[in-house]
Image (cartoon, rainbow, N blue to C red; front, side):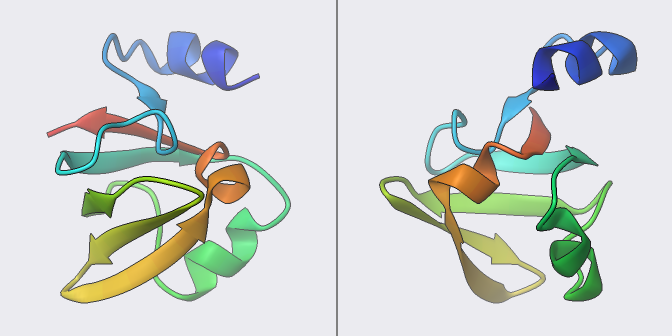
Length: 83
């Protein structure tokens, strides 16, 4: 499903947030899944630039100067590209 979205967006370097390396500056391209509406409500939305600070069972991302922890399952629903 995410691979289809990446192909539709024609983004060669698109990957999921879970797959991106820690320390990378990223731009959110697509949120796809049940919990993604809640992410949008708290400001984590398409075209936003984020930095993935840590990797593991839960990922820490810097979003607008605020650190946010996301589960790997949720990170699989976030399509990103390198900035």
